[in-house]
Image (cartoon, rainbow, N blue to C red; front, top):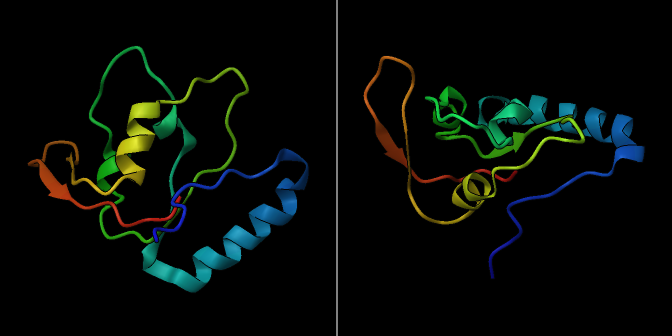
Length: 104
């Protein structure tokens, strides 16, 4: 059985959740990553998302705070939480493929 790979926090408990996530990121060290929430937002133009390339080898990924009016890029979220390989690249570097292993 596969465990859930995406969790959403509730707004009224935000301070306690942020503190707990900070502790987990500290304990997990290089396996943890705080992704800017803008990486999950729906954009009108496509760009080279360095944030997605940074998810390679990360096991615990957090993203905190978004605008209420921001739309989510559902296709990207499905791709990152699924079990299919993802292709990304850092700016001015070559593309590479990795298997998303993180819990979001």
